[in-house]
Image (tube, protein in one colour):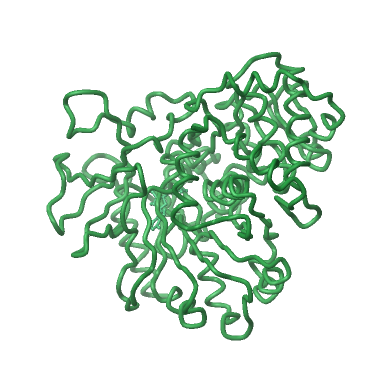
Length: 511
Ligand code: AMP
């Protein structure tokens, strides 16, 4: 039984040393070269850190092959990686780095400038460029590092939005990823002919499927440059030129393609499988895809970062009307989903409840945040006999007549906006730190984020906007900022979101 994802890389290198593993806009890399470079980096890391293991190492780079090389180098060294979204505002990156406290930061020559021109709160001696490790002598002890590795050791930490303004670092083990990878290959029959067209950023958990299925099956992953997601006919050309046959994208990306008209006008000639995950996939755009590509495999995968990307799936096997909901299906292998009502009992047929997950897929918790971890990784209330953890997702679901799970809504103020997971509370926290803001509350009206606030001094919406964009990523920025004299409080003394939601609906109806 495998203990480390590196064993996948070793197998693929043995079988297909000269096959292209990863490709980005500028270069490509074979399995043998990926393995060699990763070992060099690992040797460089061990020279700096000695035999320390299970330490966090941040990867601070523009998305590309170099990130994958860095990830594998870090794993070879017996440590775990955390990709940083380098396009985030510096304040947020500093919060992430202060939480993670990485022992090293890996970068490359092209991203290094970004580190030095921005005010990163780091020890610059801890920055290592991967190119500098390329001539490292490969340490024979690496084999020993691998044999010392446990499958429950962490593989990566991904940071997601946190409602109090501090992003949460979700720690995932090798075992969880190996289990997920074995299930994926068996279910979707990925193999060395699979060519993934990668859309997901590496700081988002959907990328785990593309990266590790490629390494496991000696497949190929082509990173699709972000610009093509805005110019859809070029996207089609790119996919065809690279003979991409598999997508695992967020629904927003598939919806944008469906709305652009390219499905009718051009053709994805090599496409075979379209998998999606990360947010609700509405039936209308899915039907548009199915109209032009009736023979592809379509699958709706569901899951949060905390359970290693995916815990339930539905392979589309029948027709749906536009007003119907696409099921998120049933639990993946070696995973159990229990749906609990407010009394922490299993729901009755037709009753809505919170989707909770059991299994090896559960995260090791939020990095350095035990209290937050204990709020959602809890003892299974149905088991009073031994330790049995479940993760409470916060997603409200129900079963349909076929026993399939249907996603209904969230129980909190977490939203998905264009595939991004956002806690509205993180926007509120950032807004409160803008000088002159007295009250702040962000809401989502189904199309856009609106920030309502009241102020203690004269301040313009534009000024609030400009300060805010220094604190939160672009995708979290409110489309509209409204200054009110006062935001009323609800019976619990909190800002009244319900009142604001009603106000926004009224404003929308008037416009
Ligand atoms: P993330 O941690 O970024 O993957 O976001 C996880 C959240 O995205 C889940 O808790 C759901 O709210 C939502 N989500 C993921 N997949 C789906 C899906 N197939 N349908 C509906 N919502 C989804």
